[in-house]
Image (tube, rainbow, N blue to C red; front, side, top):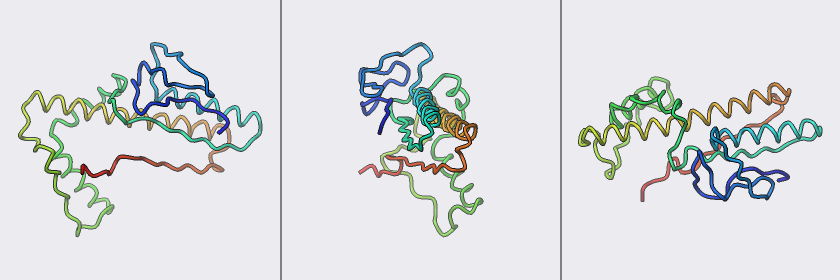
Length: 182
C-alpha cells in the first residue's frame, strides 16, 4: 500500500480518536468538533482516489471501516432516526425479519426460525429501563451501519463522477457477524 489513513487500535472513540491514528505512517491527531471516524475514513479514501486519478494510475483501495464495532457511537441525528424502532424487542424483530426473508424468497420455508441463544434473555423479562437501554443500543448500532452506508454511497458517487465506477470491482467483507457465543 502506498498511502494509509486510519487507526491501529482495535477500537477507538469514533468522535475523539486516540493516539493510534496514522497518516502515511506519521501520527495524525487533527480531530475537530465535527470529527467522526467513519466519515474521515471516507474523506481520506476520496482523497486517495483523486490522487490516483490525477496520476492516471490504477488503484486498489482497501477501506476498513471500524463501524459498527464497539464502542457503539454514532452522530445523534443518525441515532434518533432509529430510536424507538426496537421497542418491540429482539424476539419480535427476529420473527418479523424471518417472515420477511421467507416472503422475499431469501430462505426456503423448510428452515425454521433459529432459537434465541440461551444466554440472551427473553425481551419480555426485561424491565422498562432495560428495554429503553437496549432500544438505544440497537438504534446506535443501526445508526453506525446507516452512516457507513452513507459513506459507501459517497465513495460510489466519487467513482461515478470520475468515470471509474463501471471499471471497478467492489467487494464487501464483514467479520464477527455470525460468530457463535462459545
